[in-house]
Amino acid sequence: MPIATPEVYAQMLDRAKAEKFAYPAINVTSSQTLHAALRGFAEAESDGIIQISTGGAEFLGGQHNKDMVTGAVALAEFAHIVAAKYDITVALHTDHCPKDKLDGYVRPLLDVSAERVARGLNPLFQSHMWDGSAETLADNLAIGQELLAKAAAAKIILEVEITPTGGEEDGVSHEINDELYTTVDDALRTAEALGLGEKGRYLLAASFGNVHGVYKPGNVVLRPELLKDLQEGVGSKYGKSSPFDFVFHGGSGSTAEEIATALENGVVKMNLDTDTQYAFTRPVVDHMFRNYDAVLKVDGEVGTKSKYDPRTWGKAAEAGMAARVTEACAALRSTGTRLK
Image: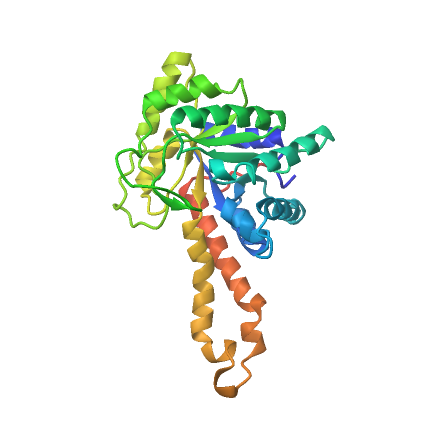
């Protein structure tokens, strides 16, 4: 069962929260990066989450048509086949989807899974993200209610982002300022609108200073202790301890202490994209620089086929990204926690 069933995905998230670790959620854009993520999880003996953004899905759909749904479905179907060779369990997730792309991405994908479930199958994806951070909170949560109902009917978990994450990802950008911190009132309004599980399970991407992109430690002011305030503020009203399953966005450059605090306060999923992109590309650049005359037909020569063969440098790229995924598992305490 390499691709998690809805029940197993719920078990994975419950276990992560109880044992205070998180699953790396790795963005992929190709069959090769998918294998790199799976390999990294397998080498760490960790389960994990594979995710596809709108931009990644468009790329996967091919540059002739750039169809996001085709790209996402194709890679998900591919993952269901190849993941069977890895001794781990992974969930498939779609990353940031803003309002203007819902009709071209998440809603059709929910329909695909609903049709599968109606035939007695499991959903194609185990979770989808609705990124309403550019909308007012009222509009964000209204759309969230609609999507949560559809997701629950298709046995899918919804991820919601209720307040902005700084920086830019797939065309959604926010300034880096004091608005990057979710308040207890924001969390209370979320619980009132979406419930605490009775209307369908969801993951909450709360903001505690997170910024997408590349930053050195210290350049971004993270306050992961804020997550405890949100848990306690909502938990005290509803009589429920630690009611939220949090997602950590914009984690590049985070310190070990910041990550540890986030895990202690309910983070069960942490997104990785920027760091794994670099880890994939860096070995390719190294190969090209070291074999310049071989990968190019310089000065009338013919180059060296074995050096420009995509399999040669592609293997190095896969290994580089897999190593970064394994490193992420260690940082998030998921190493060795795979379901037996």
